[in-house]
Amino acid sequence: MSLLSRDFLRRTGASCLRWLPAIVPPLLIFIWMRKYLVNAPFMDDFVWLPLYQKLHDGTFKWGDLMFVQMEHRLTVPAFLAWTCYYLKPGQITLHNWISFAQLCLIGCNLLFILRRTMPGLRPRWLLITVGSLALFSPTQYSTLLWSDCFSSYLAPFFITSAIAVLLSGVHVWIRFAICVVLAVLSTISYGSGLLVWPLLVPLILWTDAIPDRRQRLVFFAAWLLTCMVTMKLYFLHLENQALPLFSYEQGGGKTFGVHLREFMVDPWLDLKFILIFGGAMLGRATYAPILSATLVAGFALVIALVACCVPLFVGKDRAAVRTQTLPWIIIGLYSFAMGGMVAMSRIYAAAGLMGAPLSRYTIHSIFIVIAMLVLGFFWWQRITAAELGGWRKKLSAVAPVVFGLLLMQLLVGWIYGAQMMDAWSSSRLRDATSQLFQKAVSRSSIQGPLMKTQDLAVQMDDIGLLHPAMPRDNRLVHFLERPQNKAGSAKLENMETLPQGRFLTGGIAFGHGQSSPADGILLCYKNDENDWRIFAVAQVKQPPVFMRDAMSYADMQFLHVPRPGLKQTFYGQWGIEFKSGDLPKGPHEVAAWTFDYKGQSVARMVGTFRVDGERMTIEKIETAEEKTIRK
Image 1 (cartoon, rainbow, N blue to C red):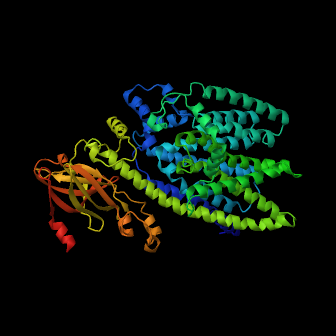
Image 2 (image 1 turned 135 degrees about the horizontal axis):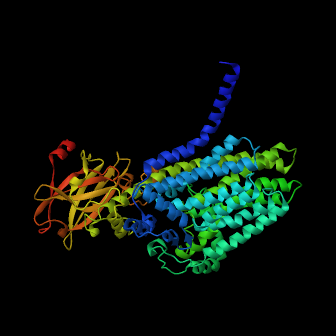
């Protein structure tokens, strides 16, 4: 091999090694999404049910894609939902993969913008690696795992795409046409998509994206005119079409004016909401209360953003600095502008601040972190390269410390977010189990789901869009039976009588190798034909299991906890009441099974009772298998 070939391979290998860390975050998110996604609708996932019903019945019209949910015109999301329906009906996890694809494309947009604005920034591999940690942070766990949240990624995708096109070197009027198309798509994707119109104005007027002054003014005038026409059409007949359950209990009337009035009542509350919203990513995974931590993080980010704006107006080279930094200031500003838009609806709906740091909004607060990261690298490189003295040199020495703290918080956020992905998925599996048995068991005998969407789940199953489908009867034989659980992992521990012909039973129930609670507990009786029949569905109720490792016995000392000790608090306790009328007449054996939703399988718990609903008597039975386990 020639010296030239060896040198080429060495340089290529070194380059790949430098860029490898930036690929790790999206790869981890891809792996975790495959592990944790649940193909079962939850809450706002049912907002598309009327569209699915029309597609199933053959009554769909193209006008049905002009869907409005509160102040959001969701035409692009409706089109994507329509596409997914035809590609694979009922596979709503396709929406989640649309979210992941958009996140990757947003990353490509940001890389292009970085290359156009700061081509000489070094070390670029480190900047992009840390930026990748921020962009793909699992602190946005619910947005990644909740299928309907695919619409949340559309606005930032179209906005960053429009910025990238505006900064590209193609013909100015080709850029105008593409930017207008992207802006219109952003507008009819999500309410925050409206921000694309004002956010691009500073880039049009105050950077050299359009060097010729006359072209710049004509571009701006055409952009402003297009914006005015679009806004007029957007708010024309803007009437909520979503069910009250998915629109803060609002009906079909115009509600945007009410939002604005509530928003204007308390400006200080609005400001705190916006700051908390912007700091929602960095304020997580700390010991501080989440509202306090996110408020402090948001305030610090605002101070940093304002500081980066000062050089736009002072200094000899402010024109060059403006061209390089203004796109990133706009990207950072998006996070707080989006916070203001959410405040208009959230303050009205929730009458407080708890809506600001919700995980499904974290995707929007990521952009201020990335923007401050890029701007921090830019100014640190400029200050260290210049012959400066005094306080500016001292200030530059603080930058590595701030960078280290930011990196540490991002890594802590990854640990926290990964654990929350597990907890969120476990909760969705338990909801899915509750939904599954709506046609097999009396609704009064099913614990959950968290949101009262049972009728919608039944409707979705009726048109063949639930996979797996709901069983039509209560026979346990529908499910694959796995080996019996050991006493340490799942047990029907007790059963007792209550007044008015009721029984109370409970125990512990771990599944999946004891790494998380069982997806559900199926309480069954054996009928006269020796068939096991399901008559009640219970759920484990406990803190997220990852907290078991985060809190030792010493940390629990002298604290009030739900049960006497750590083992009881985190050990998958469950309980459920049932009526004597749920059982056939006469004595019958009653046992319980843990349920695995993804595997559609059951495993019998230790513990069997003979129950007579007429006489209200209970007798404990020890089976041969249980005797073997006990020995």
